[in-house]
Length: 133
Image (cartoon, rainbow, N blue to C red; front, side, top):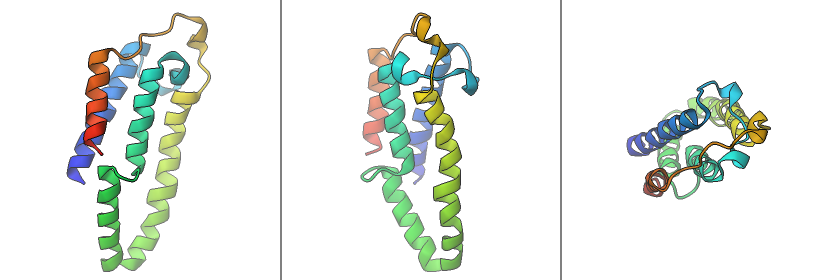
């Protein structure tokens, strides 16, 4: 779980930096429409979000299964209490913000589109994502 978290956090911070450099802001309310403006960046972010969800085959999926089966064996009541919180409430708000940034309507569609990922950035991000599987 520590290795998966380290790789996922590193990739997430690098992606946030890439978005910040392209849009010249860190305000999440001003960033939207990444799927139209930067398609490669969009695909890398979407893949990173799937790994965050615990997509089957990823390190996070394996770590979550091991952790929650162990938690269920030790504390069944705590497990039943935490499960809705960890898998319904927290991801709902987290992904609402990301989905708005990725799929939202962008006022920048009429402006010059920001540069998409360079080949060096793409190799870095895809390398981290492949390592997480």
